[in-house]
Length: 114
Length: 119
Image 1: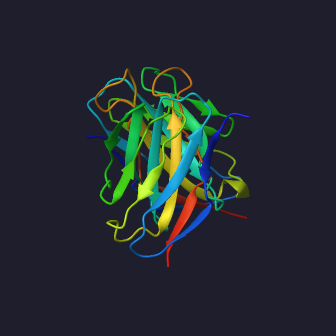
Image 2 (image 1 turned 135 degrees about the vertical axis):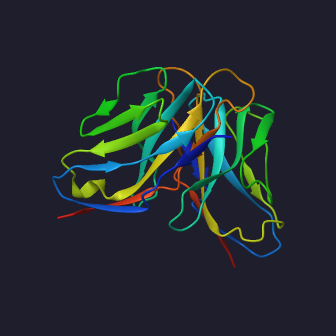
Image 3 (image 1 turned 30 degrees about the horizontal axis):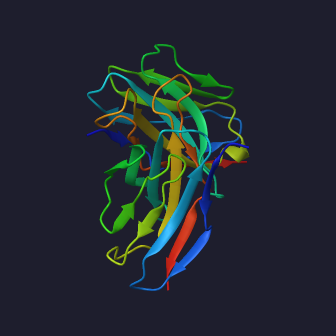
């Protein structure tokens, strides 16, 4: 089955720790994205990547880092510099041209600072 | 930079009736895609409908249809015969198309409209 997988589903972080959220896709998509969603809010773009070994900052990149060493994988690290990391994080992937362009989403990771 | 605006934070509709959700966007690009996504309480994002900017014909998917006005940069979603299962957050989204480079592939969302379907 083709799809996009995020793990873990729930993650707890102590203050001052870095944590990494995993995102893997087997859809052969070029583009991958990370979004943050706060309660009752829309999706805010953190980072996106159009191609391996390249990525661009979104609207709220401060306190986050990413890598794109493989086409299938786009992990997000929430660093200790992110002062309010508690949120729901969504990963997505897509082609960005062609007749059937759409973004596919993972099921999300709920991150809580304890 | 592209922006997407949904001006209706919340809406409600009676079961079996029709409702229209509004979306406007701003871009200087000519090659792009527009989407409506649904997010039910499970928080899984589900594609409702897609529109390619180069197509003049409005997209339809069963009870869902769009009114795409390219010159006005408007992309509204009409839900006919509303069902209880349509209750969800609805997000309008914009993606630049084209080849690698610049802002192509950037996928941005509006803030969403919370739709409640009442029995």
